[in-house]
Amino acid sequence: MNEQDSTKIHDIVKESINTISYIEKYSEKIIQITDHIVNSISTGKKIIIFGNGGSAADSQHIAAELIGRYALERKSYPAIALTTDTSALTAIANDYDYNQVFSRQCQGLVNDGDTVIGISTSGNSENVKLGLEVSNEKGAFTIGLLGNNGGKIKDVVNLDISIESKSTPRIQEGHRVIYHIICQMVEERLYQKEKNNEF
Image 1 (tube, rainbow, N blue to C red):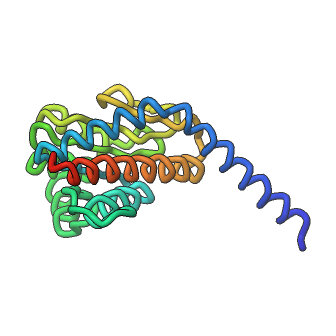
Image 2 (cartoon, rainbow, N blue to C red):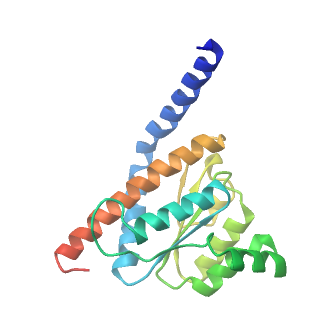
Image 3 (spheres, rainbow, N blue to C red):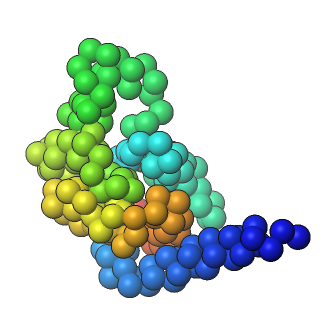
């Protein structure tokens, strides 16, 4: 085994573990996010998620966990990733500007009481920021899953979890653990409401 490669693997794994172990610091915010998502779904509202690149994939992952299932057999929950409609994305980017690909969709899809999640590892993605600003205007509760200590997006959302790292891979790994926790907690709470005929 190449010792240099082995050391590199060890260092990457250690850095990832350190980032993930730090997530417990965000427990209160994770609970608050869960509360808002549960409230939105319980009252007939929806969850909207968006981001670029790997964060687009994470947006689709979250929506799939809610629309499909995380671990329990239960109702489908209304969740939309704004990164999946290539016709809308390319039309908006072509006819307007790429920075408007999310804000234009939010203008048409977001309603009062929805929960909107913007994901940005830099915390500075302009199109994510604009989408969240429009969502605020529409009466949604806005959440940022961010990196880089929150960047400029931290100041436009109602609630943020900002990974204190500048490494995109480590931030993405942290985000995935966070939203898996949220999906599990949301599902368990709504499943219990369903069993109690409260939902």
